[in-house]
Length: 292
Image (cartoon, rainbow, N blue to C red; front, side, top):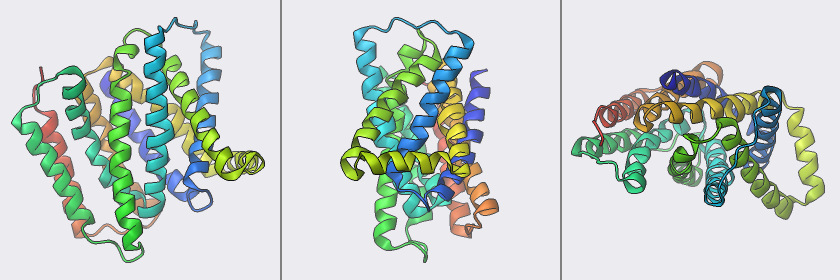
């Protein structure tokens, strides 16, 4: 079931990325992050009430970890991702996200002392090579400045996301997934809301919520990407190995590029196909390694 959850994560997230890309034309990245987090928190809360899931007893250390995970993985990483998406578009953003799997393995080694073989480093190098092949030249419709900043933001977003899920993996084995998601996104929502109020003012912030909740693409993207995919994502990490979950999650890269071509008419040239192939090859190479 863990593998199935991880595959469903890729399907939901790739669909959400396309919808967020469409929404980014009407909203700032900070506004998008606040609105999608609000919808996610509401969804988790309603589901918990509907299923009558008892409130778990988190320790003070677990609450601290959830707070760090929420601030870094939701407030910061999601903001960086959405800003990157706004600057470089869906297909290139999807390719940059291939850095996620090597990040999982490297951080798993740092956090849990999982052994990393030379093959893992080679796979990570191939993944990065795939990104370089794809993005070494900025597309004509993207300025050089936006391109460089978008790539950097995208890479940082994936590294922070990988860290934020790995630190809560021990907590997932002891507590319900929905409460872990609720706490993480609750903290992320508060952090994002505070930044929005400071930047825009409380009146403008409230108006952005009203505007966002009336936007079909943003609401549907939030339900798929912040509600369903997060549940599947955490379930995948809970019920299977981190490496297996990561590789199945990475299928979203392929789907994003395909969906961007089908629904957003983004170009799919030979360089993108080569870069995508290298990224997938490197990811597979990393995942086939047996870790201790």
